[in-house]
Image 1 (tube, rainbow, N blue to C red):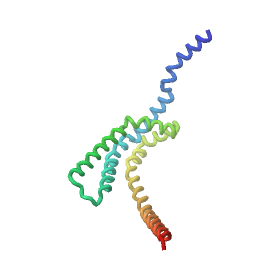
Image 2: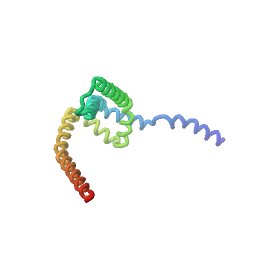
Image 3: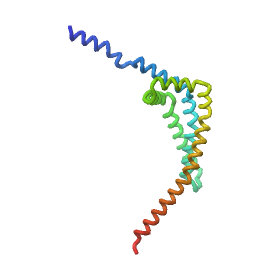
Image 4: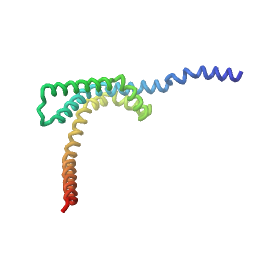
Length: 172
């Protein structure tokens, strides 16, 4: 009798073990709402042309100072198109949503997410989102103006150090 009861309990609990819990479904819905009010999908999709442009820039840097033949130019265009298609396929919204859900659930509790939904759903939050690309652009420009001189100095210092060490080890 005890054995039959145990088997029955196990059989009834098996479907529950594989189904998403109500808390999981509620958390997913909350993350989905947050991503919606934050316009995450639109933001991600607007980044695709920037990714493609940076890839083309990288290819141009690889061939800098060199005149490409028509065949080489066509080859680079095919590679760029293939890579862009691969990136677009890999970064579809449908493939990214589960990752976003996991990240947001691991990082924020339900109160934090609700506070963000309330803020980003408000007119003020929407204005922040509207201005975020400008903020990022200004921040990047400011960081670059700070880092370029430092990077140049570091490069000069490293070059001088290498030159000095090479002079020290030259046979006399």
